Length: 234
Image (cartoon, rainbow, N blue to C red; front, side, top):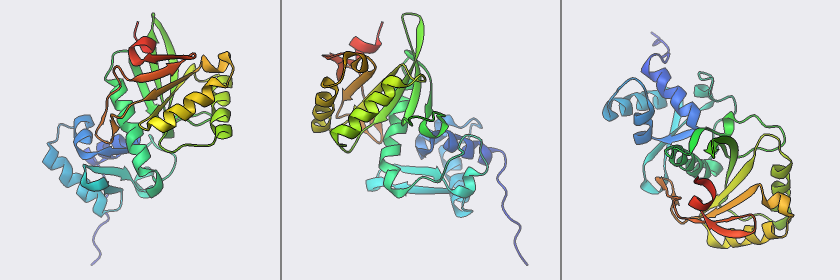
């Protein structure tokens, strides 16, 4: 006799929707975001069921926290993700994007944010977008997490596209590699002042899968070395 097909419901759908919003998320953080008040142990069992049934996949990067993401089968059950199943090549990068976005949203300076798969922009596709507030005005800040250095022409082209963009007021490039930060800083210094007025660079060694510490970190904006507070705080 064939077993009946498992159809997610209740907490299972909440789990799928939460993963769908963040694209990829660790189990501990997933527990804090789910709305059904389930314990970590209970949620881990439900995630295991979803994984067994093919709705989610998981990965343990360097034996760190378990991270979960939707399979193509799971994506069909959420309105938060209309894109594609995450690839092995982008796992590490996408984990860092989610960590950076969630950390920034813990700051009252930032009001709302979305991961790349929920950003609808035809000309350019940032890793994330966040709505910030300063001097009682709101602005749209695109976020790019850079882990591998691109060519000068490619980086400058991206700078120019953000300058022309009507969707984003600024773009914050974040990297945990000092050599990349210095190269991107040099590339930006060769652009016009108008372009430099929309691009912010940040270097921090404290960008990891389990944390993003940005307070007091090194930044470059409008041709000057600054820190995070110089740029974003009132």
